[in-house]
Image (tube, rainbow, N blue to C red; front, top):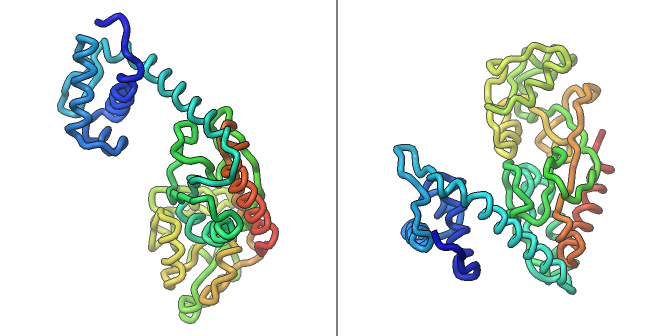
Length: 303
């Protein structure tokens, strides 16, 4: 094995090595890196040639690290962490609120809460470009998959700047078309005798019913969907009674709230960013508008 690597020329190969090691295949690594599969394969072969060692063994289920590959992995990850830290530090030297800011939020939040905030942001700071990632996957801010995260759970990543903006009240809702054919429930027990819209693999709604002492089962929900924006559209179409943020549900003219006195635990809203980015003008500007607008939404949401 070579005693010394040319860091400048080999850093790209190390990035490719890490992607293959962590995804287990050339195709998955190419998707993650935005490269073609042949390019990824050539980079791996070039790195193996420089090191005079084989880094991966091919198996039926993908590529597995050799002993040499395992030995290289910790140092490669340290290189990646150092490169990310350098990028974040350099980003902190920006002076003007210009450039792109990548925001990640749940699909529902991205559809129903953030558009009007982003419109205000663009009017206030036209030099800032917004990249909105609508996903229910928790993005890794450390690896710059996003600059700011808007989440309904407290972030678990260490060394992050976080702020609890507020709490969004929740309620049960039904479409007017559904209520035209079914009497509105008057007690929580009545819900189990209605058509209900629930989640599929996500057990959050089931846990909520169980917390209130109701033995709800997946079969009690005639329609189930984990995508919360699609879930809400199913409620709006009259498929049954479902839960939503009161800010969204009470603003829909085709929807009526049911059991308004039955209190569902609210959803907390958390903002998160990397400390190396928090002070940059563009991220600071976006953070402040998100903070102000989401705080206002929590305050004006029907209880």
